[in-house]
Image 1 (cartoon, helix red, strand yellow):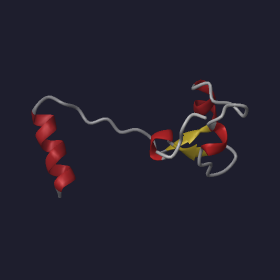
Image 2: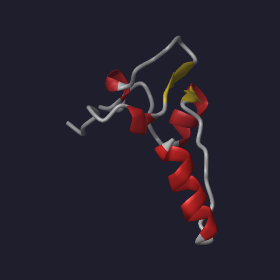
Image 3: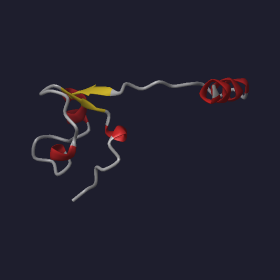
Image 4: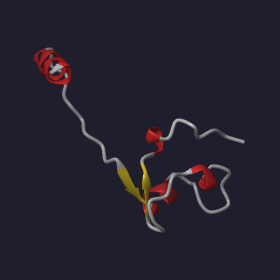
Length: 64
């Protein structure tokens, strides 16, 4: 698989693989200073009232 080959090649060159969560807690969003009044808040894809998709998974987000 291409992904596996890329990972192996980069690790051999002393890069390291970093995995980040896909789902974020609402508390992490507030740590980024995005609260209910922030223009981006309504654009976040919420899975429920406490969890949302990681912001980089939502490329449609833009500042108003």
